[in-house]
Image 1 (tube, rainbow, N blue to C red):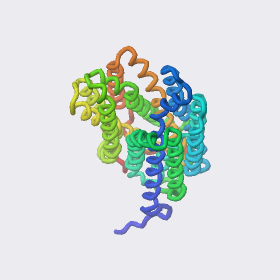
Image 2 (cartoon, helix red, strand yellow):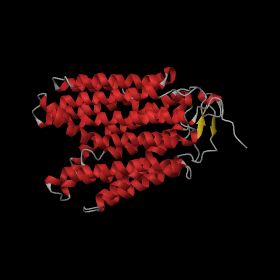
Image 3 (tube, rainbow, N blue to C red):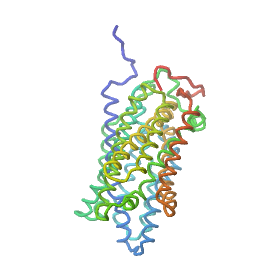
Image 4 (cartoon, rainbow, N blue to C red):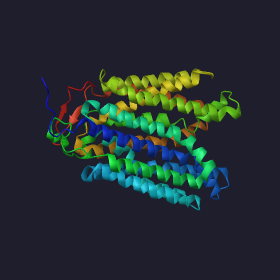
Length: 422
């Protein structure tokens, strides 16, 4: 018997087109960002900071201020997006990035970069909004796949950006690389502007009330939502702890100085590739497991891989273990975002995903600073603490997270989504 599609459900190509728009825009934006951020210490040195400590201070402050400010403001911009449209807010963020990146090319003092990065944090937050747009456009049974695909693009961009940025700096200079980054954001803006269409109210939802907005307090009070936030923060903290210390660790285990950069790059790439596999595998897993089980097992997998990494002495063992670590991290991240997203009604996707993203940004801002301080006493201590965090998180999620993910409604009632295996 043929099933007649609901009148408010857009054709298949409509949500696919939206998925393409936000995925490609995320890839362009994250690639553009990482074209220039690894060059920041060199640029700061060119602007007059001669002492190595001064360069490190300005680079650290400039890199940390944007995610810190964005973490605070993400729920606010999400609420504005729920009221006036997510597409408009993403376009606003991308336009601000175009202007700020172009302006950075004209910086004359180190503090100019810090001020522009702080200003960028005021208008940022489009990463979380693109996740919300992907989740809201896709049918509910494809939410994990939609979120995973956007997160994959956000992983692949930073994997390619530093390499391309190094090449560009040699061709057009560091200042010219900032203009190229502005062009990347301009292309991302064009993709969203011309391809993305905001879904009509009620799309993909069985209950019309599910399209209404609810406050952030109602969202965070959902069963297990705080645990999802803790999981996202913890996974991001562990994942980003490698940046300041991995090259030093590679050198300590006996790698010759001329090969440290190459080996470190291979290890970072192995972790990123593993994470993209985990992002994509999550949809398959959530069709067979509950989110609680998927997150707990993924965290334990990442912990086991980290133990393998610490036990290895070199060779193929290191990239294999970090690739497996990436699979665990990628799976846990996508599963956590999906579990949280399924509790958020469509009308509150902006503020809901803003809260989820704020948790990730907090981990992103705190991790490098904390792990850099810990590494002063012992590099291995950072990895041991990371391993402990993963194991504890896995236990907390397995014990405390509800087995079912309810769907939030505007009237405060939460109903189970029994047709979707979690």
